Amino acid sequence: MWISNRILPVLLILTVAAIASHAAASTIDDKVDDLFLKASSGEIRYQDIVQPSKDELIEMGSDAVPRLVTKLSSEDARERNTLVDIFRGIGALAVPALIEALETDNLYALRNALQCLGEIGERDATESLLRYFTDEHHSVRSAAVTAVGRCHDSSAVDPCVNLLSDSVESVRKSAAVALGRIEDARATGPLIRALDDVHFSVRMSAARSLTSIGSPACDALLNKCDSLSVMAKSLAFEVWANSAYRPAAEILLSETYSTDPHVRGFAVVALASVSDEKARDRIEKLSETETDLFVLSRLRAAMNLLESKAE
Image (tube, rainbow, N blue to C red; front, side, top):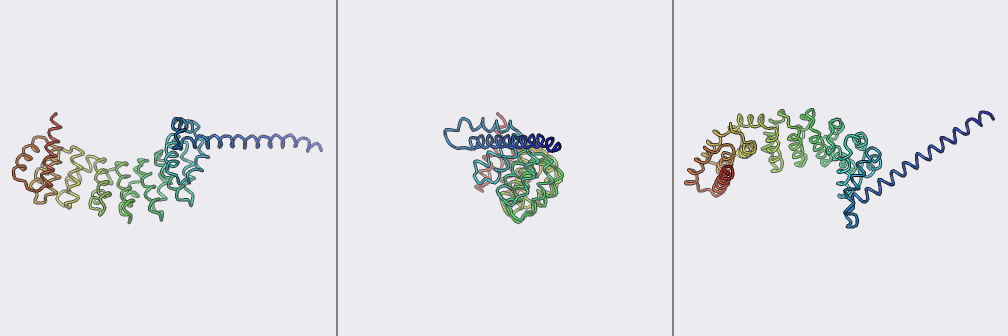
C-alpha cells in the first residue's frame, strides 16, 4: 500500500504532463493551420495578411515544421508555392524533417520536399537528394537534380553530368541548369557536348551554364571551335558574347567570312560584344555585300550593340 501511495502521485503527474504536452502540440498545430490557411489563400479578405502570416510561420521555426511537413502532399499550386516560401525562410532548421519526408510514396509530397530542400540550399541535403537521381519518375529525377544544383555542391558534378544523358528532355535540361549553378569547370566538356542535344531547351541551358562557368569554359570552346557543329559553334559564339571574352575576337572575325549564314550571323553579333574596333570595320564592309536576310538582321543588331556601347 505504501508503494502504491508513492507511485500514484508520480503517475498522476506524468499523466497531467502528457495531457499538457498533447494540448500544447494541438495548440501549435491549430495555430500553424490557421496561419497557413491565410498565407496560402487567394481570397481578397486575406490579401493583406498573406505575407504577415508567412512571416509568423517562419518566426515559429522548428515548432512549425512538423505540421508544415504534413502539408507537402498538397496538390494545390498556391499551397505548394507557399510551403516553398515558408521552408526557404525557416532554412536549415527544416532540413532534417524534409529529408525524412522524402521517404514517401506520394509523388506530390516527394517532389515538394525535393523543391523545398533545393530552395533552402543546404549542402547537408546533397547525399539524400542524390538517391532520387535514378527514380523511375522523370519529374522526380528533374526535381532532385534541380535541388542539388541549388545546393551548389561540387561533389555532385559527376551525378549531374550523368543526367545529361537521361532519356527525358526535361531531366537533361534540369541537369544542365544545375551544373551552371554549381559552376565547376569539370562540367565543361559534357556541357559542350550538350550543345548538340536534339532539344533546344537543353542546348540553351548548356550554353547558359557554360557562361556561368566562365573563363575555363570559354577557353575550352576556343580550343574546340574548329571541331564544333554549326549549331554548337553558334552557341559557343553566344557564350563568348555573354562573357565578353576578348580572346575570341580573332576567330570570330574569321568566322564572319564563313559560307554558312548562321555562323556569319552569330559571329558578327558576338564580335560586336567582345571587340569594338574590329567589329565596326568588318560590319561596315560586310553590310555592303551581304544578301542573306538573317545575316543582315544580325548586322543591324551588331551595329545597335556597338552604338549602345559607345554611349
